[in-house]
Amino acid sequence: MIKYRRQNALEPEKDAEISVNLTPLMYFAVGFLAMRALIGSVRNLK
Image (cartoon, rainbow, N blue to C red):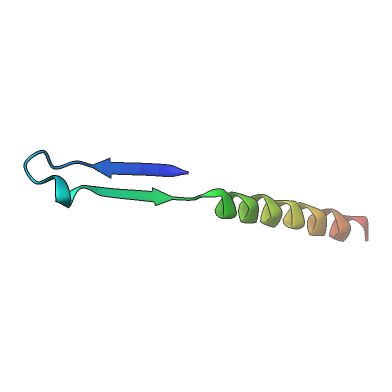
């Protein structure tokens, strides 16, 4: 998870915080690469 916080000293009510959760993207990338490797190895067996 990536968190970014921006603070405004003059106007505290305008503070902003953004958080991005990259865990689903990581799972997708690992799964995609694993399936690609599996399909590639199955094709090489034939």
